[in-house]
Length: 421
Ligand code: UD1
Image (cartoon, rainbow, N blue to C red):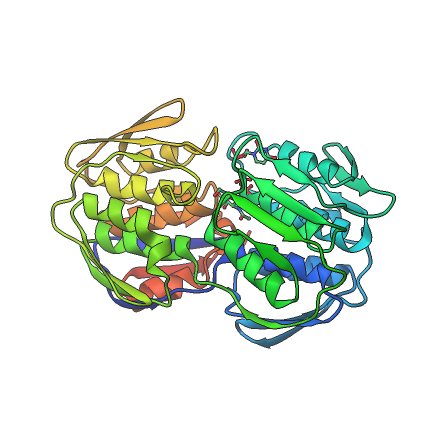
């Protein structure tokens, strides 16, 4: 069993290079299923969810060649439909992008029901609505999802009932090779949706409007290979920005797109830290006094739900009472019990956490209850007095490229240790 051990008290200084965005790399990897050619993907983060996804494609017959630590060549020319291993697929949420890409390439799909972090119910009704609108017959149970159709997906208009990243991506994947034009209304606007559209367009797709709430996809007959670099990870960047502010340090983050960080930067500034923006870097300077602030998570460009646990830790150190409301998931406060073990004073009422700041944090044995919650525990541990041991760190490794190494470089007293099971 692996653990991360942190001895708190050091403030972070220096610089950190941000990796490619996990949530952009994953749909782009699954989009390669649509391409009967070689795609070279650069700036791919070295994280478990990416490795798992590449293994899923390998199982289906794709040739995967790692050209360097962060560059991978994917050739899906010889791929077969429905061959992904259910055990692998169930380990990761993003495996449901196979539904859209298999449906787009083969006119049918057969994929095990996806797994992922537990934030309460995570239905896929909007994905199904999209596939059905495109002409698919969908059979779904808790084991697997199957799509069939007579002639493959056909362009159509789809209005999503809610803003959903996953369903927007899945319909884009299914529609790229469809006959006719598809228009998605009430689409998600996240930067990774724009990145997927840019990748597909580089392969010859005709997608416009990504980044707005109306996306138009004119189906094409085939896609060709390309070389494409993934955008920087705004959530990894936001995490280190909060860590710098929480420890009262000063950190330069390189390889970022400051525009993607606006909601996080402005909330961090509200707490008193200074954020200086440059072309492709930001510098965060923490202050001794951290001010209370209220946070509500929203789809992009609102404050991201994937930054909610990290921001809650910063507010535990603030002078006063802060309110954190979760606007995307029904249950995303499971980490609060872990923070309380470290001395935090937080009460959860439905979708709102009331944080009484200023209580000193102390080291404890805590668990990473999910990916972002896990990294929030690391930030809390950096600010706590004494030693914290964090278990279930495989969840953190799903989405953070070398978190221990990067924090050590900035002066944190942190190590990963392996205990016999
Ligand atoms: C993606 C991200 C995740 C992030 C989330 C919101 C990946 C691999 N994961 O997850 O890190 O937290 O966006 O930014 O990119 N919903 C439905 N029906 C559906 C689909 C979604 O009710 O068919 C609900 C969900 O339960 C949730 C909300 O819509 O409450 C948003 O979900 P969605 O945007 O689809 O998130 P994911 O794509 O799963």
